[in-house]
Amino acid sequence: MKSKITRRDFINGTLMATAGVILVPYGCINETAMGKLNPLYYPPALTGLRGSHPGSNTHAHSRAWNKKSDWGTTTKLKEEYDLIVVGGGISGLSAAYFFQQEHGKDKKVLILDNHDDFGGHAKRNEHTIDGEFRLGHGGSQSIDETNEISEVVHALFKDLGIELERFNTAYDKDFYKRNNLGSVTYFNKETFGEDKVVRHPFCNHPNYIEGIIMGGKLSNEDAAKQAPLSKKGKEQLLRVLNGGVHEIDVPKAELEDYMRSRSYFEYLKNNLGVDDPGVLKIARSSALDWGNTGADLMSISTAKSCGAMGFAPKAIYNKEDPYIYHFPDGNASVARALVKKMVPAVAEGNSAEELVLAKFKYAELDKSSNAVRIRLNSTVVNVQHNRNPMDSSEVFVDYIYENKSYQVTGKHVVMACYNMMIPHIVQGLPKKQEAALRLQSKCPLIYTTVGLRNWKAIKEMEIGMAMSPGNMHQSVYMDFPVSMGGYEYTKTPNDPCVIQMVSCPYGETEGAPAIEQYREARLRMLSLQFKDYEDEIRAHLGGMLPKELFDFDRDVESITVNRWAHGYTVNGPGDSVKIGRQPFGRITIANSDSGAHANMKIAIDMASRAVKELG
Image (cartoon, rainbow, N blue to C red):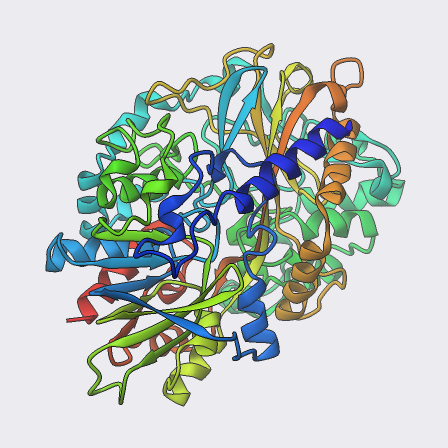
């Protein structure tokens, strides 16, 4: 890309994010550096590498990987809190809110987070394109399965002014149909020999965007003929598309057990006779982000439930519970509404919808006058009771801010960070609990938002969602068409828009254990520079869209790559989740990990449980 975009991303992004942080050293006055932030400090507008941005995990990795324990002299701040929350994602913010509801709004709470923004995976991406404002989400996406929301979550939504009925009019259900946008598959030249868009969802991705035509505009036969594969590959592809449970020749009474005990790839290779690398490549990505792995590691039963290629697409919504509950910035709006409740001066607005266009004043987050303080860029490295956990009266929490060590004291602590980090930072955990926490892991994810000056090329190719089995980002789609709180979604193909590009990376070796694939993909993800992602996106969009309507340097205004080295929760075996989340003295555990599901509703429920366990 022309240098102006790369230069802008790093100068206005990374450098401004750090340069605006420290204006007053911690030890000078009884006011933290966060309380003296530069008014220009505003993470949602930063582009470039975001999510777990460069530097956000440095100290955590030093602690976990290198067993670092010496952080130099620790400054013991004269700060004592009724509750300290480790982790400022949805669960951590909810825990702070529930604690004040339970014990009084005058209770002092400190929330510590290693990132430069609150919300965790609920990341807000702001793009300004030719003077027009566009929003996207960089992780936690929507409120799903609303028929299964707990009373706790319903009550919180009411407090935050989140009205689910509002989405019935805010979400433009006819947008995709009106613009003739459907589901396609993009085959790239590098992997398949030519750049080609086929109007058929070979990768049977779950229909998680209400209104997109997922069935494709071609028959299986015509789609297979158009696929850039050899004659043998086309035949095998059609065999898979027309396949299904009926291809498994076992007695009906044994079918369920058979499908649970046999792999999907074994079914493809043995039952359907598939050996073409291109067909297997398509199949491996065909259950994208629903099983936490490539389809090569799924059982037949799991692949079927995820809508992998050859099985009916899995719809996660229905007429009674449509998948429309999506703020313009995803679940970042929920995080922002929580912060506004606890730090009223941070923005104007009394409900989540009223806050959609609000620019938050980050300098308000960590003022000493706040009952709830949110301290960003602060990595917790040690949590320890002041004496025997069962008899303790307080907990010491050490964290690193700008490479210096500080300590604060709390009567209680809620660990709302990743489960896998807890054994590295909480001292004295029972061995059984520590072992259980270590068994849980997370699969990596990348959510990239791209600001386009127009979407005429997307309209021409009729792309609502493009599955892309040969690319880093396995799917590309027009973002959810939601207008609310004064924010307007893009209207015509001539207008600016934000597109979403999603990657669920896995290892190169088909069939390798999931934990090994996660590790390989995670290290590869973190080793890439912004230019590497930019080059990949350039090739992807440039190959997929017609050159007469799309020019990358002309039409791409901004790119935000939200890297989550530790993304979706992957449960440990047996009762490890329940064992891992047990209270420990004055410390309890919240987060979606402790609920064994990567879901915002679960994160909130786990926060409620953790606060109740504090007594």
